[in-house]
Image (cartoon, rainbow, N blue to C red; front, side, top):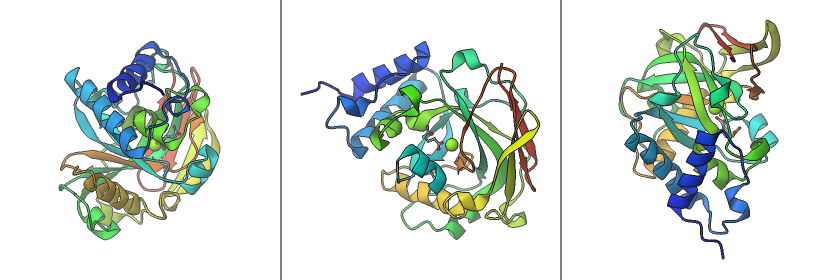
Length: 260
Ligand code: 0L1
Ligand code: MG
């Protein structure tokens, strides 16, 4: 029988993050690591970050696109925490020496104008609670070797969260057709992928509603002023030194990010 506990898993994952070291899946050795336990690890991990001075600034959805679910071999979206220490100013370089094996994905981000709490949240009521919509980048960095994990592993690992960028000043949701908002992902000036907002659960507001309802089932609300990353529009691309990744949105503007 394995002797894993919530605290031991948090120590292990935070240790890997601090040492920039990827390791084995927790689920290989921890038979009892089911989804509710994994979310307890995730919540305890973010509590540790808060105790060490970080501030929760929002939440993210992961694995919201069917393409990404299929590639990762996981068939369900998940939620995780964003803290201020993960936030990079627009245009700031991504310090690769702080990370293990970062990958970048373009996202549509929401700044919440009102508190939102499930159950019963729909895409329409979710969008009504949004103050502004922004172009975003998420830099993910799994604490598991080769990004290989089962769903409880990646939930425990705060959904590979590492860094993120939100472009300003954003637009009110009423000015946008988010399912059709197009995004070209570029690498060093060449378009390598493209998608529309429909890649994220059919509509990014559906992803926001999903987050509000699944967090609500755990007694957690999405607070006014929080940021929400609605999920990768395209597959995530590895980020190398001096590589420039761009995300050119039809209406939300263009974001650029460079690894150093
Ligand atoms: O934000 C994401 O979709 C990442 C979720 C975790 C899966 C991964 O590391 O790609
Ligand atoms: Mg993401």
